[in-house]
Image (tube, rainbow, N blue to C red):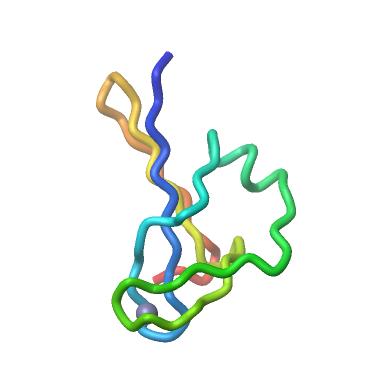
Length: 76
Ligand SMILES: [Zn+2]
């Protein structure tokens, strides 16, 4: 079954979401992995922000049109 996972990061400076330069096969593999010292440059404010599970989310689009959404526990 084909699935598209879009991984987004929330900039810790301007609080906007942008597409992660690092894509994971699925949310399970991401949450099962450990990210250390990963940073991404925010396209809005150009500040390097840390990539952490706390400020990431996934949009998972399935063929049947259903989407699941996973967000960090402090996400607004
Ligand atoms: Zn920013």
